Image 1 (cartoon, rainbow, N blue to C red):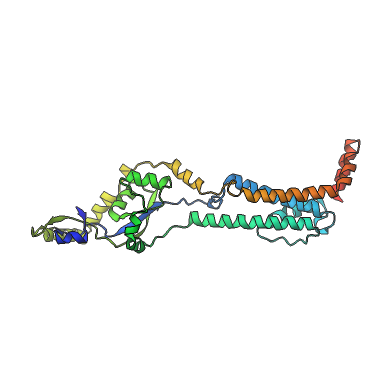
Image 2 (cartoon, helix red, strand yellow):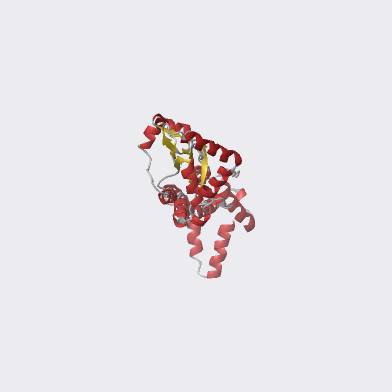
Length: 313
């Protein structure tokens, strides 16, 4: 058996193809989990983002509570407005009017950080969860240039290892080869696209032997009766007994490598941290007299009471 290649028809005779005609594309099967929206960011980045949302609410509340009635009231109200304001910046829903320039400056810087953070999250989520579709006609049209820029693999194990460790994103090959490969690794890889650009596999005979028409007739008979399809399923797809265990650790490592890390967006948090520190330092400098008065109290109870009055006024 051999691929039915056009140029060979001048020298040999081919039977009708007994396999699916065309080439296909396979890629590693994507996970489908209910918490998949957490995937684009690493845990450390989620924690850092949440901490800065809370910190923003606290700093704005400290700066605004003396002059802005919206940040005053009962302890429960102040705590609620503190958390609400911090997390509302995620969707730009904060409606409280800020009185001090320092708090306005802080919010402008933090909204800029949030804008880049949400854009990065959306882009990464889209890139990791959108199933890739390839125009195989374009690949075949530019096949000469494509061969010089692709990785050549030989065995099924090479295919699997390269897909799992991220060396390649997809494999393009004739459908019979890919059917064998998918059968070896059920539930790990899947065929995402096909194109009828090759003639499939057939038997090759010497020109003038007269065997090709007879074999083609038998192939056509087997195909029309459905026997050929059953043979294909048995030989090419139902290979569970030969199933190999792919390296799942490599798969998990590849998913982890696609997540945004705190190092990649660390510059944003440095900018936000400097802005928070400047605003907080300015506020402490402006209220230094009251803070020193509270700290000068001799009795602990009086000191706590004065500090409570300082915060609650």
